[in-house]
Amino acid sequence: MKKIINTPHAPAPIGPYNQAVLVNNILYTSGQIALNPETMELVLEDIKTETKQVMENLKAVLKAADMTFENVFKASIFVSDMHNFSKINEVYATYFNEEIAPARETVEVANLPKFVNVEISMMACK
Image (cartoon, rainbow, N blue to C red; front, side):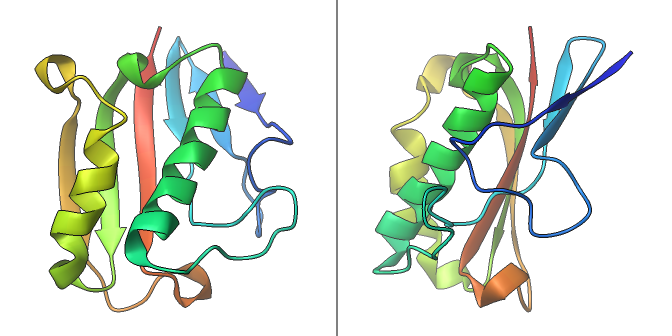
């Protein structure tokens, strides 16, 4: 059974999709970018601040599904410039216990929605 997950504590979708879908206790989040959910303005001061906003958005989506980062088993990170990898990784690491951190890939892409620098999606299970 499919359940749609949406919360006002994460940015509203900017296209024909939902923030997340829960199927058979597995949560599939849509990619999150650094939109402030209250203002729908981008948070782009620097790459660390941008990444923190992305992770906070994901945290809100996970919470709406009664989950935390401990439930995450897979993450996908898309970056516009691989030179930002270490700074993104530094922020990302603060959200996980390294011993049970999820599997992950990081991919450099030509462009991201709204021409942001980082987008992250996750899969989690109960």
